[in-house]
Length: 115
Image (cartoon, rainbow, N blue to C red; front, side, top):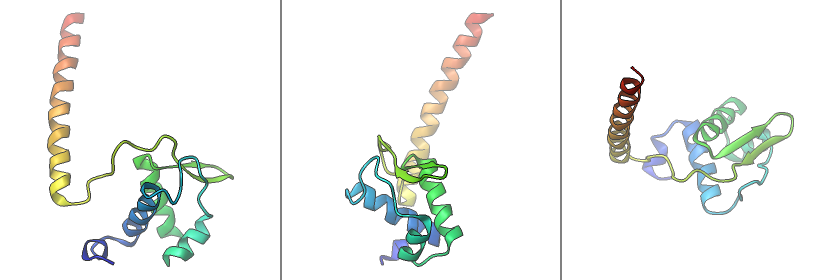
């Protein structure tokens, strides 16, 4: 395990592992993942830790949960992986700020046109 992975919380390590399995093609879009209990055993984590990792991946758009059926790889997959380093995160936040400012300006123009 790399030092970067060791620095992550257990649920983040599990999420990274599952994300990498999807990116590498181990699990294809639309494919059902093993049960939460099986995944928790495979990753040597508790069920709540695994469920938290699944929740993160669901929020990021990598997975879909279908009640009483299971968890599936999203189809289509998200366009990009989340930032993995602090530098990448800073770049992402900076780009988001620029996009937000542009959107705020567009909304202001639309609201002014209504008046």
